[in-house]
Image (cartoon, rainbow over all chains, first blue to last red; front, top):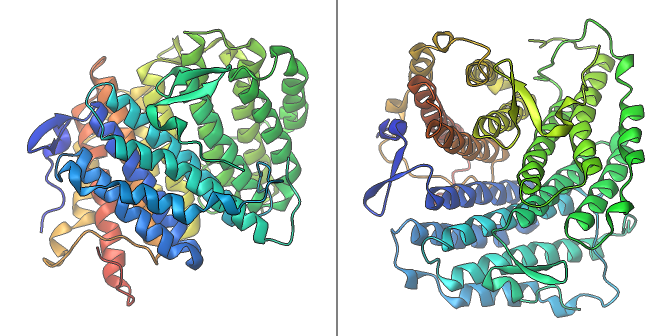
Length: 168
Length: 168
Length: 168
């Protein structure tokens, strides 16, 4: 089986059944999504308790990649996915006294926090792409909600810890 | 308490009391700073000996974010912060025989080295922003010195190790 | 010995014996290469079995940096390096039944997978630079092959594990 085709050496890659230049906004967005998925998988390998959440989100992000790359129809990603994020994060359960946390003593929360910033990077790449070719609104909604999701998950993890120092 | 406002779904975000597009250079710079802060916090969770240094730098970077985003006056970040970096790194204490190190066998130094490259990414984003709207010179000085700071800290960590292989 | 020259505070840096602006495509490409090298070194610190491979690749990437920055002649990087990647990855040894793997339960493969995406980011930066100033074709070939290399290495690591769940 051939993985390495060498066809990419000339600066193009195959999406939409066409060759597209690797400097295009769509390849940039797909590359950022790829990095974000990889970071999500890494998070999954480190904490079993996040495994099911990470797997679901990786599946969603892969579905988004397939749409952006033109392999899947827009209808294959639905508003239900964003609703799932909203229900799962359940932000109403957060204490009113909640403040932004710097998890200086908790590697799990710090890793989640870094992933949140990577999702933000994906979002910026998708909005740049959106200026050139329309990105489905429900994908933009999902990615915007996903950074909130990781933020709130970090807060909830924090609330579970006994060592509650390091709130700035 | 609401974290997730959904207002970002349309591709704008709130800074300077206005809505700004997520594709702007200022949001890119703030996003890169956010990622850099997250990596600095991660470093802090992994090595206790770096805790105080990391916390101070995260505070500095947050102060810079607040200025870039227009929430704090330019005067809230002073030249003292760069002086603190310079005094703390104390590069004159480095041995003359010093060479650039590839810390192939030391995860702590390798992690510091990666953070150094992320600071460089922030610096490039700030200079791009600076072409459009002036970034205070003392912020640019601080960020330039901060990559030197991590580099020199890596060298000093190396000097402390007994297993001194892997200098290229 | 002086590491910190402060000359970079004005937004330029020294390459080709000239001062170049930090917002240029060449500094962006060098910065992305620097981050990729740092991630490769980090991988090396974590798994001894990857040490020799990582060291060779870091040497190659440094050689590429020196050429891009104008310090070394183009002839200092040869097609042999790409051949070495191709021989080492030996993709023909992969099972025909092979599928793309999501290494949700293996931190080593997940770390390799993340590095693969970072190599892709370097590649995009090099092709952007190539639109402005010619990047040697054998460097572009090497970087394209390097992401395949990490992908195939991840697959082989997977084939070695007994816990073969999580193929999507």
